[in-house]
Image 1: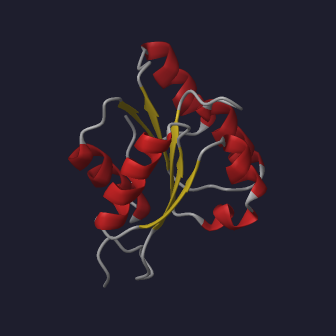
Image 2: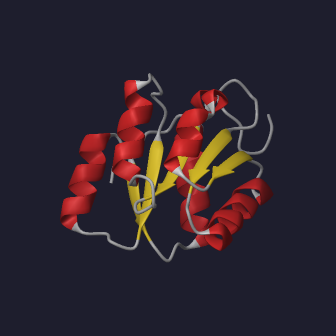
Length: 134
């Protein structure tokens, strides 16, 4: 089985939505370096416009982006039938944000700045079918 593979043995496909180009590139390189197939986008609209994004195994999104927030984005993806696990990353990690993120369809909320090993561990577990809820 490949490193960080899905249950069916293929490399897990991860989507990233992050408006900051440096953070987006850093997340992409981190996850690619850990064996994931990664696609990254600078806006929520770009993900929604790319219909191939619907076959992702896991979704990682920033909370605040210029065109829509991460909560609106996951709601749209869920409405369009995407049912995979999702991670929200935010510098605004309050009880209210965590509650709203869970209601919107996120499985995990991680606080920025991110610890590399925490993100890779969570994405690995979610993309391999292990459900997390925190």
